[in-house]
Image (cartoon, rainbow, N blue to C red; front, side):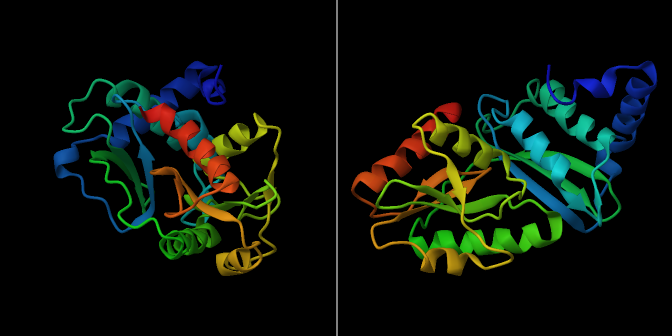
Length: 241
């Protein structure tokens, strides 16, 4: 049983869900979204979204237009993926699912091709993570997070204690635990990711955790710390192979 099954425990809830679907999917050829308030990009595999339950859990923590998403919106997103996405025909069934919610609360989903990151340097990963922190300040969840494996084997994440994490980051925490290591939250207050980088030891290897790209290890990394980071990267990548 998933965390969303409770939404359909009554006929009233089911009717509310069906009404919401009808509202969201009315005449898509005539329906144009207003200015986007939230854009989620989730990696697909074989017309599915392997981390869907984790993504929906993270979505439930997001703040959009100043308020959390409704139960109906969460239900629509999950059921749309499970029912509509699997039956669709796409140029790339292993592409990227994009969920867009606009300033009026309307939502659409679309599918596009997946393109790996062209630049995996530490500077490029830090830049992406900094942009995601800016989104977190508004929406409460960062779609991408910076992480690091230190020379002594600790796994650090540039997130605050108690901060809700994106779907991919929760999987990284679980993968690290299989090697007996807890992921430490290493971001104090609203500090920028640059402070996180500045606090790392000289042998640390940096990686990006992304709902779209999985775990991306900085280019040129070597040594035991790099091996641990690659273990996390490969563990996530298996879901999309």
